Image 1 (tube, helix red, strand yellow):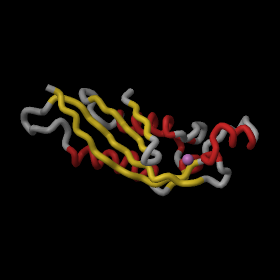
Image 2 (cartoon, rainbow, N blue to C red):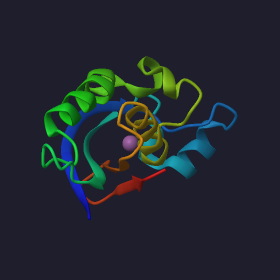
Image 3 (cartoon, helix red, strand yellow):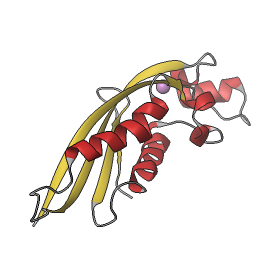
Image 4 (cartoon, helix red, strand yellow):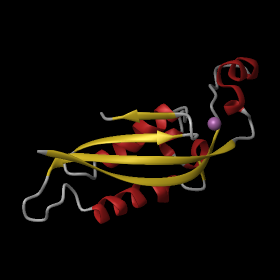
Length: 135
Ligand code: NI
């Protein structure tokens, strides 16, 4: 019997979507307002879901305090109030689209959460636009 448990988190971050090998006109045509050369911010909402068997000793799939601390250390402390393009090494050569951000988040969390548990990460870039990745 597998149960899914989830934790919500949040961070604010700035980004710019662009390719160095495209001129400003093409970047604007493809990435629109998200290509503004002076960067802009989003209020990102994150849902991390962990699925696994209920531990018979604790009654937990995963201790939510442990999950909370992993998300804080790996994601919130690294991304919150940062410029993703210039301050977060993972995006040095990776366009910080919601799709790429969710994969980076998944990979950072995957290495910290026991491998017998499945994880899924959902990232809201706006209230209406969200992406999900589960490996
Ligand atoms: Ni944007």
